[in-house]
Image 1 (cartoon, one colour):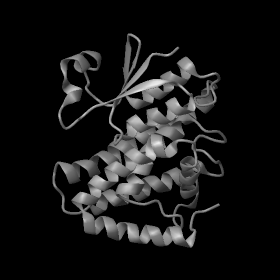
Image 2 (tube, one colour):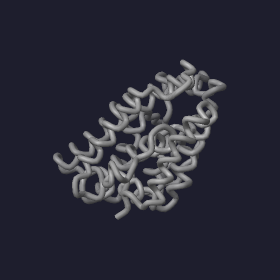
Image 3 (spheres, rainbow, N blue to C red):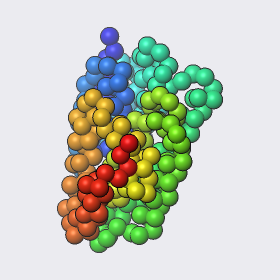
Image 4 (cartoon, one colour):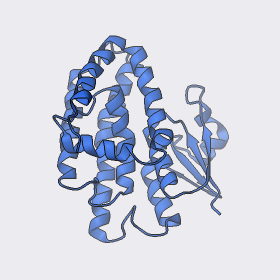
Length: 240
C-alpha cells in the first residue's frame, strides 16, 4: 500500500496536476494543505525535506520528490498498472516530455508566473497587453500540437494532459479565456478534460479560487474579459 503525502495548495496548478494523476491511478493519499502566505512551506522540517521550498512536494515513505513533472512521472513509473499515461516507447515518451517542458517553460513560467507577479507583487492596475499576446501565442501552439488527436500527445490520455490542463484552465478562468472560434481544437480538448470524473474536485475548484483572487484585484477588467467568453459559450463555438 502506498504511503503518499502531498504538500501544497489547491490554487497551485502544479498541485492540481498531481491530484489529477493520483486520481487517475486511484492512489490513496493524504493532502496536507500549506498556508503559503504564512510561510508554512519554509518551516525547518519542510526545508529539510525540500530545500528548494517549492510546491508541490510528494512524500512517499522516506522519499521526498518535488516539481510536479517529476512527481507525476514518478507516480506512473512506480504505481501504474501499465505505461499508458507515460509511454515507455522512446518516441511516444519524447512527445509527452516535450508537452511537459512546454507547460513548464512556456505556460507556467512564461505566461502564468509573470501575470501573477504583475498583479500580486507589482500591483498592476490592468493585465499587461503583451502578456495576453503571449497567451494567445501559446494557445495557438497548443492548437497545433493537438492536430487531429483528442489528446495533447496523441490518441490517448497522458500525464501531459494533466500538467497542461491544470495551468491552462487557470489561465482560461483568470486571465484569457480559450475562445472556441479562435482555437476550436483546444476548446474541445479543454471540454474533454473537464468531463473527467472528479475533475471539478481535483482541478476546477482550485482554479476557481485563484480566479476569484484575480477578480478581486481587477474586477472591471475581469468582468469585461468574461463577457466575451460567455457570448462565445452561448454561441456553441468550439463544440464538437
